[in-house]
Image (cartoon, rainbow over all chains, first blue to last red; front, top):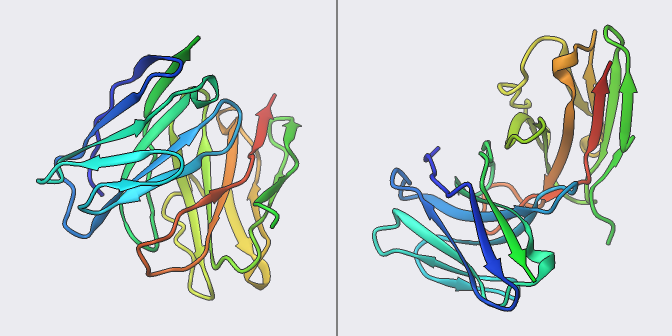
Length: 110
Length: 116
């Protein structure tokens, strides 16, 4: 599986866009980029995933660079409930034997 | 519908005792995963079940750890002769379809195990 690099922590003002970067320079051609988040004391929650094209859903947008070596998760209007650890995970579809790593701890500030 | 459930939510046990942790996946989900998360750490993969295939046990840290999945549904993770380093949150996840790209894992709330 590809290795990832994420900043350990970030702050974002409530109501502003939160942009969370992830470097996955060793991603292989058949690996998707998945994003999950883990709110304190809860199990991880799926957010979004993509292969090459940018993706958007009701939770977030995912921007993947053309060379696929990095991506950015965008929370367009961060709320206090978005405070969580965000994990970027390159993985093949189907069976995903992955280790989530330590992710980025996003703190949304009132 | 109901999500992934795990029981117990908290378990305190004495060193050397055996414990069983239970996971009820979402109905119809064929894949089931167990992870462990130690304090302040990321998730560590333990074991994976998919349908009737042999499970991938490569993440189990020692032979004190075992898991089974009965009838393709409920799973039990057993830790024998517990040690203090086994203290962690044990998370279970399930997913719908194997072999397709558009799938995600649904996680349960976890079982917090404390070995004293």
